[in-house]
Length: 197
Image (cartoon, rainbow, N blue to C red):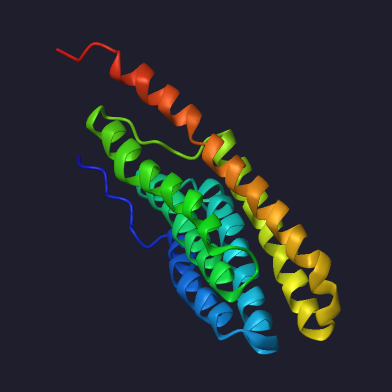
């Protein structure tokens, strides 16, 4: 007797795909600039981070951890952060070129590493370093939103907020790039395994 196929639209996957919607909306708010743009964009970003917690929680609770979730959850994170870092850079929170390491990292991860691993029958789920990267980006994103928001009230604090943003985004970019190295190690180990007869 055939087992029923799991539904695509599980609660966990709904939370994951909500993050795909929040990313462009959040970035658009930041590009608007000003008090309301930062306020609404910050709260949308908070909602996106909340969905990141919820999708993993419901996937485990309802025993619906799937390859689809393993694939799209990190892609949702990647799309969200690439968009918001680019938008914040264009808005002036930090030099926009500092969004490039995030874009390059995610391009290599999702255009090369994951498809290559899939050809070997392996689904690259987020590991400890990938989750650490997401946590660091989340904390820096929250801090930067608050800093930029307060700059709207007290422009004089920009003299130290901008250097602080530069340090935070630089450290975050370094963590993001370094976090991809274990995936290369995993892929190399898999590629060295003999093909099944």
